[in-house]
Image (cartoon, rainbow, N blue to C red; front, side, top):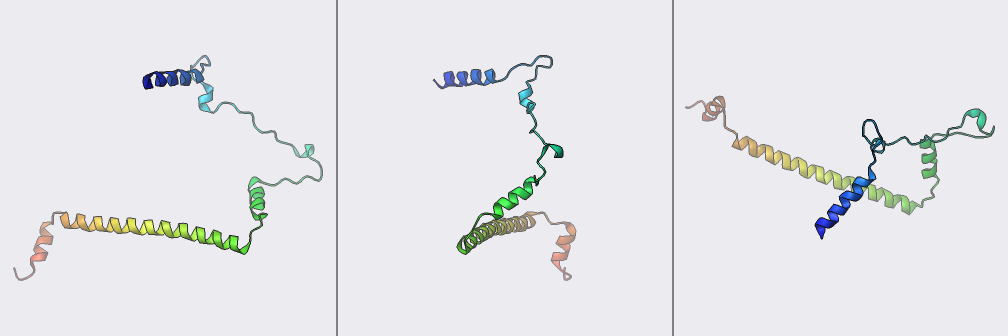
Length: 123
């Protein structure tokens, strides 16, 4: 039953793609040719129209949301908790890397000069 369903899936997936002639590549695979949004020239806009950028619009929209002091404190606490969690993960990763480095140093074969220096001046 599963094999039959997977066979059905491959048939439906292959039906989505269509050949477009010459090169055999389906243009929908490359994003297609979507029509650009209509743009207005300045002479097409009313004389009292004001144009702003998307980023300005987005920032105005965010600033227009009314928040209580409690909402702002909750948001700050949430952001601080996220930052603290990331910092904790980072510190754990750093400690793990330092431990691995120490183990690698202990396991590494010592060079001749290191062996001589460990024997000390008395030998």
